[in-house]
Length: 156
Image (cartoon, rainbow, N blue to C red; front, side, top):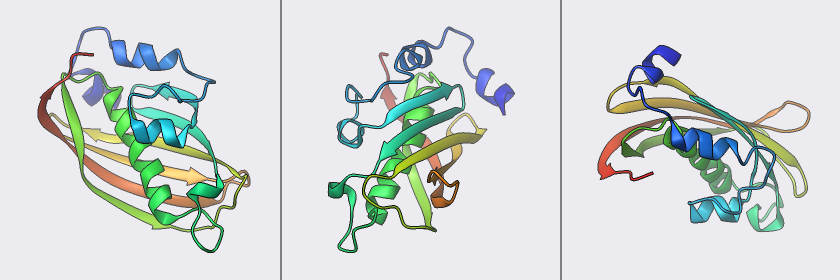
């Protein structure tokens, strides 16, 4: 995996270095508005992987009082998207698909760990996986996604 990631750019990865400064902090300064609303706490970020903790808030729940599937999907999409952004590619990537499985309920106040990892980083398509687990290690939700390179040139 790391060979395919590293072979596509040989310059210093400024985005990854920037994100590493926020390890241990809440992401209320995220460039993503939804990322600021989710307000996760960055646990770790490396080239091709990322871990963020989220606390389930009442405004993230459905009528049954558990984490809404759409919010779980949003968490997964935001984490894997930020992880791909942190690869330092010249152009932006966007999700082509996001396939989520919802496997366990999460209630208000629970702290969830979301992990993302790059499975394959091609020139135009990056295939990723994400997983949300609770404190007991139960999988709350998991996803696979493909992100495609856009024509939007990134300046940072």
